[in-house]
Length: 342
Image (cartoon, rainbow, N blue to C red; front, side, top):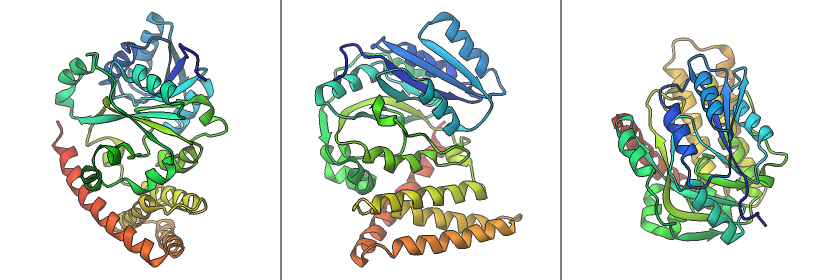
């Protein structure tokens, strides 16, 4: 059982975020739930981000700053997990906004349901929407409807197409999981012995299977509690290198195999794996500087994909292809939406 006023540790990996960092940290300091440990992990920032972190720590005892050499987001998240002393763990990206009631409502849902994790909904916003978002995020609201999910790993693999979630209604939407760690509140013990794989992209995809498989119950709060800033120049939207493509293939393959071994059909990872192999092949074909190692990775990744897909029944591969086709069309629309955000 959680205490009446448990300590919640919020981990914020920080790297060259001086433009938006204050908005992010202010939204955390302004939480209606006050018993917080705010861990700002300065991952070797080369701009003023580290100084901004220190400034906040000097004015609020709940803020702790960890300055470290640049090691990537996985390294920063791990440093935060190692330093966290809270009963519950949350994450926030350094350019996003948490709703004023984020922690309060997720914690209330976690305590009421005795779940392992509570999750809320989020909106995608452009830079021009920040002023209005900051105002709306500071307004108190009633907690949304709660839905319990008893098979999170299965839901993660099956419910991922937006079109089908809309058609399925509120209960289907509640079963939607992605790999992001923000807009979540975890019981601390879920992270015992679990750490992100450092030195690679797609660290969240690698973590999804092991993390969700530990959970017996998740509670969904039907309420927007987080605002995800869309920047076309961010790593998520702009990073396109052989290492990036290969890491995405490897992460999807690891999660695919992990899920299969637990008797669950990895439909989401079918899409992730096939899409990543396709992106890798097309990306290298359009590059003027391709190393021999990159060519070998492409060949090995294609063979690995075929081996894994061969472990699925024909009917399962057909369903996977249909879902992947829907998701591909949705992603094309999403890319247009992201680049339209200003």
